[in-house]
Structures are given as structure tokens and as C-alpha cells.
Image 1 (cartoon, one colour):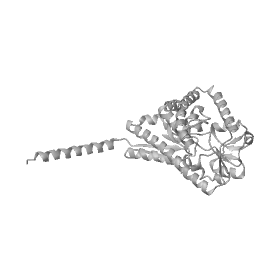
Image 2 (cartoon, rainbow, N blue to C red):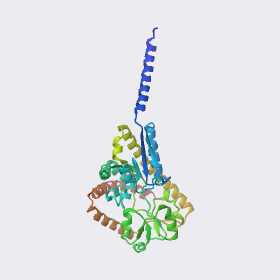
Image 3 (cartoon, rainbow, N blue to C red):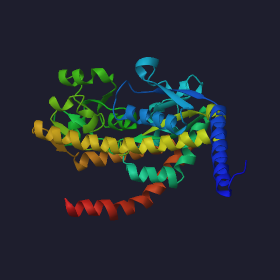
Length: 360
């Protein structure tokens, strides 16, 4: 039987396609199935934090054609919200999602990788991470824990807190009982506040009963679910967390076992999920504030008086000077951030600040 040249050409194409499909199937079959576990600091359905983690895991599964899957365990399951770093370090979990300032008591140098009082805005901080040497410093700081860290989503500037009474002077702060964690808590404690940490589920009741006089949480998008606006009429603008970056933590040894393809898939998914969480949180806050403004017109947005802001800045500077004397890694990170911020802030003032100043 003879075939025409056209038929032979068509047959060749069919055979080539068939060979390609077979080789692709074999490659997929040969692809090692990777099943990881991730521990979150957060409880179930704490949007947008948990949404960012779920989006990351979904992207990893999709891009790997189902060969790389990540099971997510909330703090409701593993029961150790502030033990995430240790669980990832020891290999009990392959990954974690948390915030570096929670490890302040364990390793102070990790603190500024989340945010610092009077520090960078979210766009400035992302620029520092990806183009100003921040990623290299973050990996250097986490290396002693055998963990890699990647940006995990930003809240943007957090609000300064809900207050039962208006703050008109530095004297008004003295003796005030406030829930505020981290470095900002140290700053305020040195200014005469009684700083406390209370379990999340007890915050509303504590504020309602007067056990505390004020508290900070995040911003309207997350605060509205907590109901603080129903009992504390003064909502102060922020200073302590201008760009709160969460972190994806990855066990170094487990990351090294991944194929180059899966390493790329994971890092791309984390980066995209982090940015998506940032814009989701911004959207949530804009919607929530519109609702609060409409339904609770008694809420008054305030900025701390200049006297108070100046005192907080001075105390913050003093504390940083003390702590960097004995912590070279902390000093290296802060020097890098402050150097980059000085450069980036000039552009922020020319672009964003000038635009907002002239158009609001």
C-alpha cells in the first residue's frame, strides 16, 4: 500500500503529537508527589489572613497539576498559635504562616521583618524586601533557626486603637490600661501606660467591662467583626504598625528537597498570595469603614496630639538605641531599613503625599 506525501506528512505529525503526549504523561507519572503541612498562627476563617494562605496552597496545587499539595492546619487544630516557628524549625510542619514580631522574646532581630513603629509604609517595605536587600537580610536572620522566610501578606497601616476616652495630652495616657503587643507596647509602657495582652476572644468583654481602657487590633476590615466600635467611640490613627508584613516560614531542609520546578511554584505562589492579601485587606477596610461611618456616626477618628507623638518617637528611638547595642543582627536590619526608607520616603512625599495633600 502506498501513501501520498500529504498523508505521510499528516501521519508524521500525528505520531509526533502522540509521542509528545506519551512523554508528558510519563513525566507527570514520574513527578514525585509532594504533600506538605502548614501551621497557621490564626484560627479558622480569620480573613484576610487565612484567605492568603488558602490562595497560596491552591495556586501551588494548580500549577503543579496536583503533584504538590499543602494541608493547612489552623491554631484550632495544632493548639500552638505562637509555636509556629518552633514547629517549622523542628520539621513538625513543613511550612508556617505567622508574623516575625511574635518571636520578639526568642529572637529580637526578627522583629523589624514584620514592621516597626514609625517605619516604612507597605509599598516602601515591599520595595526594600525585593529590591533593597531586605530578602537577603531576612534569610540571614532566620538562618540560625534553619528556616526560610518569605513575605506573607501586608495589612498596610494599622490603626492606633479604640479608646473609651479622648486623648488630649501625654498626661491622659498615664495609668491607662491598654492591650497593645510587641515593641509598641514597650514604648507605651515607658510612657506610663499599663500594657497587657489579652486573649482575642476576651477583648470585647474586657473593653466593655472596663478591664482595659483601650486596645489596638488591625483596621476597619478586621475590627468591625470584633465589635469594638460599639463600645469605644474614639478611633485613633496609627503609628506603631505602618506596614505589618506577615511571613510564610519554610523548613530549610524540606525546601532543599523540592525539585527546581516546585521551588519556583512555591515562591511564585507565596509572592502572589501575599500581594493579594494586601489588596484584599485594603478593600475590606474601605467597605467596613463606610459601614461604620453610616451606622455609627458617633465614632470619632482622631490623631494623637503632637505632644504624645513626639514622646512616642523619642521613647522609640531610645529603646532602639539600647537594644541594637547588644544585637548586631537587629542593628544590621534596622540600619538597612532606615537607609532605604530615607531614600524611598523622598519619593513617597513627592508622589503619594503631594497628591493626597492637594486633592483631599
